[in-house]
Length: 122
Image 1 (spheres, helix red, strand yellow):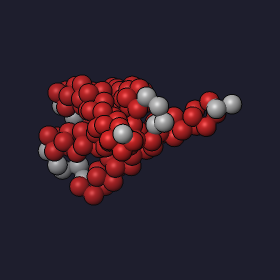
Image 2 (cartoon, rainbow, N blue to C red):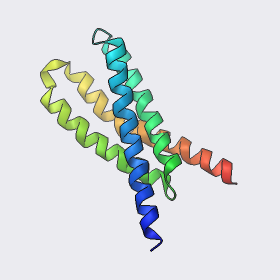
Image 3 (cartoon, rainbow, N blue to C red):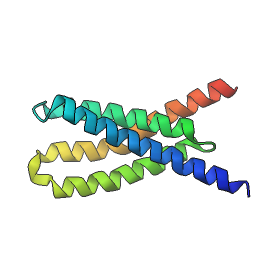
Image 4 (spheres, rainbow, N blue to C red):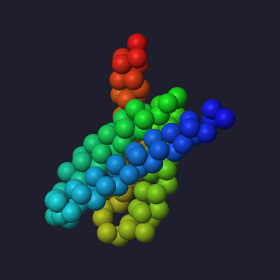
């Protein structure tokens, strides 16, 4: 019976990280527009991924890095699908770099969140 709330918390943690990336990305795209250089877009997407990994790790009850890793896999699959569908809309290097950065950046955010949790509880 103790697994119920923990499972819900796990789903909420990963969902919150996913929601954060999506909403921040949408907000930035609407605010900045499509005329920014791709390197600038990569930078703010990476910052949002880092923040999402941090949020996910902070909300997870146990194994914060595992939760951040799950988020990174979800983002890799969804971003991979989007890259395939929009391949001609941007340069190939942009799609590749975006996909390569997802897992390490989200895990770095997760590690920072885990370190914060340890510092606060220890």
